[in-house]
Image (cartoon, rainbow, N blue to C red):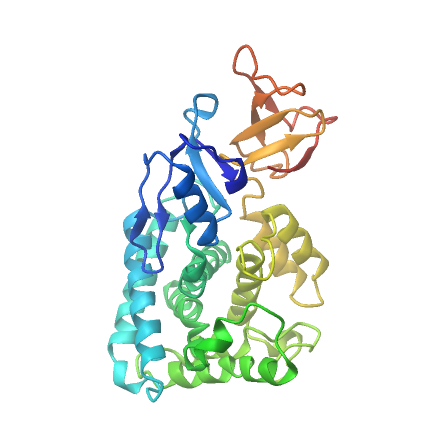
Length: 360
């Protein structure tokens, strides 16, 4: 299979991976043959990339960070909790206790179990969701990235749980904002920006009301927009004044936001997002934490379609852990646009004159 932009999908192509709804349920399943009506509908839902099957990329299978059942269960619980709070603005968190702590502790426990079973600590997130699922899917993605970071740092079980609960719930304060503000697709006015920034305090108040969730988890919601140089909010904290959990979640938050398609801008590629993070080292975030985070992110996930400096088009077949920016690429188009006479692969780690120009 290979990941392609929606504009490159043709009628008759078959989905290799399902398209998911906000709650994790399948909107369009793997194996569905796409008609032009389906393609147009997917584009209208804000989906800019899909996985398709074709003979040239046969056998290439990206590995998701967590199992499908884990993701579906987590998505459903996040969706249910967020919507409960959105639909009942008067709720401040107490009326959903103790379910909140118990439910999300189980969710993150399942995530960690999946992560520790992996053969390596390099992750990519491959699921395709409708655009409206961003708020729900974003919290889960941030929790996955945070879990990887916690394991890499050698956190004990209690620390992992504190970090994971904070990561799953860090944006829960968004549920207290007006829905029209969350749905806005243009630049916020200063007044709207000020209102939006209140979500950190709202989230802190919801989480700290739960008797079985650590106060440090609540501070993840409070501090995840603080920045290393003191330019963040709500309290303009600097450096070590920001808890390490909140810094980890802040990095994961920015990375996932940049690599997600938003109504007001195109997504960044993982390599572009990593460049942004490195440029923010010791400005927005601690540079050592950024280095650790980026060490565990697949810049070019398996099945990514790329253009090489030679004009060849290939599909990433394998990542090199010691050279994450130089994967093994299966060539599917020669510079003249013709398919190769026989399938072959290039290990960019050994071909120093070849470069990946861009994802296509």
